[in-house]
View 1 (cartoon, helix red, strand yellow):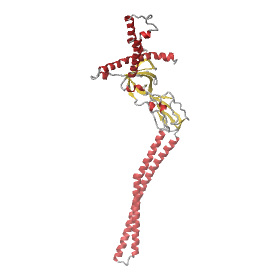
View 2 (cartoon, rainbow, N blue to C red):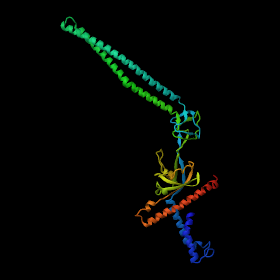
View 3 (cartoon, one colour):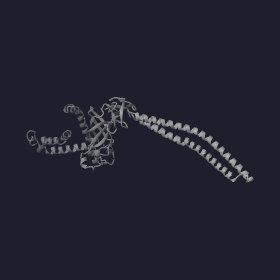
View 4 (tube, rainbow, N blue to C red):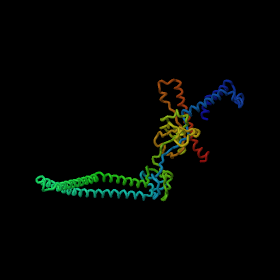
Length: 409
């Protein structure tokens, strides 16, 4: 309507003034209800064409949408495993700090696993102490084996020397028996040395590795025990938290509640029409008015324009996708942030809003290579944004009336 009134001032009004003061035709006589179309046909036709062109120009270069929401972040309260609730530490609508415990699952199994891991570490420590004692005993066995071996060598050397001096004194069989004894004593000595090396390897390598593995199992058991206490990942307020001791919590089926972080505010997410895909760019100036803060225009800036439209999303399934199921046109998702700090402080998160975005051609207008026709067109595009700004302010004035009176909400 505003566009039509503006265009009529440039088309229908001049046509009427020409008919009235140049041709002398008067309203109620030559210009009446039946002859108005014929008498003012040029002005009416030009007004319709100009109004349609102006509306198209305004809504294309300065897009508007009512699909705007003041979004905020939420965190789902979920345990990492199934379990029965044993204790609840907080209530609904209660503020919690980061890391504060929310509830605890039954942890008898985890306590048993932790105690088993502790006992295994203690057992390996005991094995290490026993191995060190055996290592001291192995030194004694080596000394004993060395003495026996040396004695066998001496006896063999004595028999060999006697046989060399007088072959009839010592029988050859006795020398062979002495040699077998030396070889046996040498084997016992090698076995004692090998046993010591085995104990040393066990103390220095095997038992530390087993202890490290047991300590890792102990740490894992402690982690599993800690998982039974579900804590707040960030500071915020607990919502829809109705757990009671005895409830079963399953992360795949049932969440425990929702945590609304203190830093929950993200900004506005607006869904503009697909036809504005070539116009919407990051850095555009925008304005918004929200139901949660009536009679207020909030200056915004476009920070990001999503490069894809959600309705075209496809994912692998066991059925082929039918394009007919995607026939509903989606919107161009755009992220808006307040231009000044503190503009969102009074707006409840989740409020519905109306937003305008304005095309800005200042850089192109400053270019020395711009043509005159292009310069005039861009000036006209920037100027008609004022009409859309006026419309948004009228909507801001009428929004409370429409919400409270016309819709009864």
